[in-house]
Length: 287
Image 1 (tube, one colour):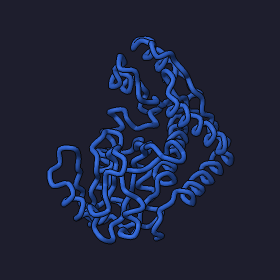
Image 2 (cartoon, rainbow, N blue to C red):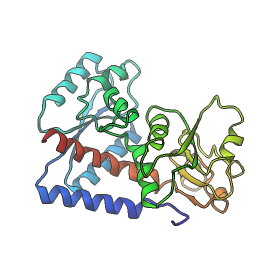
Image 3 (cartoon, rainbow, N blue to C red):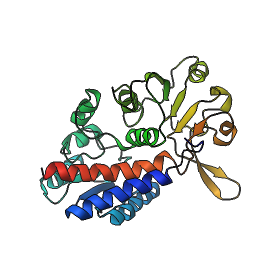
């Protein structure tokens, strides 16, 4: 295991495997991303998905809607995608306008096309350790742990953050009886008391709180392994802005035994895992 847990060699392997399987079998997976309104960050992420998808043979298209689209109109559009046999994955790009009911919209997406893994059926399957779609970000963390041969069995792991997208599924996945599970998991959040003391006990820290540089070096145990899920934009005197994680990377580097960088860590693998879910959806829908 190297100290800097970079994504590049891992995603190179994932994309190569995806491309080989798709080409060798003549598959034609298609992902449709629902994008509402104009959001530069969301548009950048979508463009990146389109580019990565094209390289491996997955068609990624966008359905762009005005910010004033109604709940009924959007549900109708999703139903069309559910019924389209040529569409294998449907992804809802967030954030959504405040007038839309996100929970009802997610419920409307066909669970077999729910490549984000947010439909209650897929969430339930994850908790019960049954077959289903795993959200891409926690799945990316597992792939990093597996690739770098980081032992989780019996380890004290602290997950910082309790979101439905990362924190909660991450904790459940680490509890599974498999090679990236069997951990003793503590989930911390904004109401956790003695947070620093709890983090200090962790052999592995997974930071997913969405707060730039929140975890300081002195909060970490000597020799801990840090998986930084956070991607935060902060001001930079030279560049105007730069991206950092939830952990103080430079200050923590000499103290920990391994750490993921931001950028170039979990986020890069997340994109690969989403495309992997699209191929999985294609195979499920085609038997």
